[in-house]
Length: 84
Image (cartoon, rainbow, N blue to C red; front, top):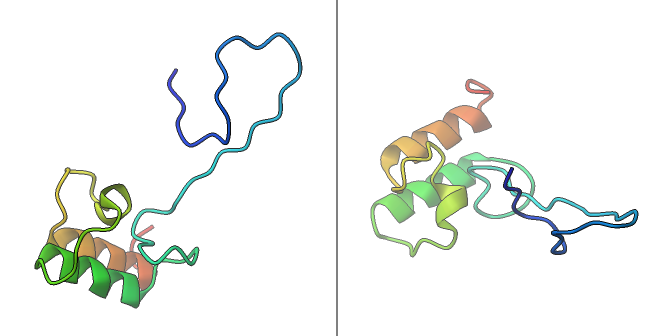
């Protein structure tokens, strides 16, 4: 298995170890813990090259490797509780 986003590195565990996963929600480009219409608008502006892409992985909601209007639409649908 490959795990990413942990708060420390570990490869050979010989005693109890507490680790914490740090993650971000897809579409939450402002990092406030919620996907909102403002996030969708920011993603759309990134797709149109009006704003620089700050975090490709978070803005690429559909996971295709590109920031497009589809990512903005998916974020908007999530913000409106249409998409889970």
